[in-house]
Length: 174
Image (cartoon, rainbow, N blue to C red; front, side, top):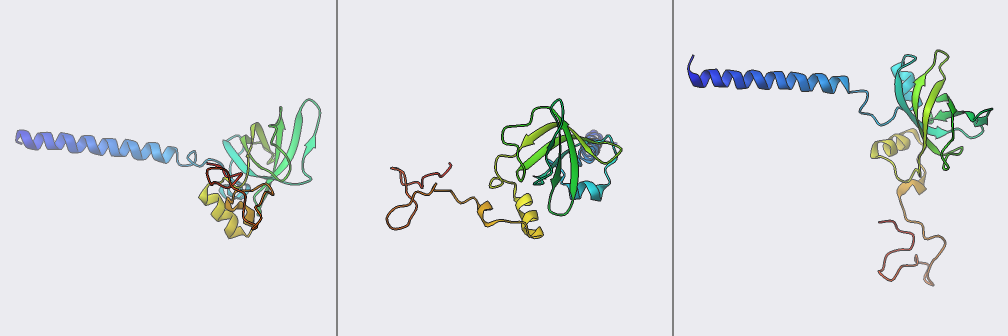
């Protein structure tokens, strides 16, 4: 074997080992790459009790129940499935029924999601494209999700939105 062949063999072997290591890491992180799982995804995956993950969806209206010592229970839904959530702690200021929420925790043996962290989503207007596509596909899309800037009821004489001195619509976010 010549020197050049030996060098090429070592380089090829090194690249193969590196590719195998990258494939193993990506395979191990496959489920962790998703920002959150919806109740439908949890039901489809048959997540075993004790496995930590993030749960996202809308807080079902009428499901919020407050208990003693900051204990709270509510249901998170995505239009197809619901999952009961139990949390003990202070909820974010933006948390309310009908609002988007992301909770981090694990399922218990009874199928209740025991959350140790609850994050309230600011507004459904700002959502990932795949979530918006899923809402459209399920028929839960609202026209006001489109990201149209609100003029706060301020319109000019011609019925057009009022603008700032720079010509931007009032209420537009940059």
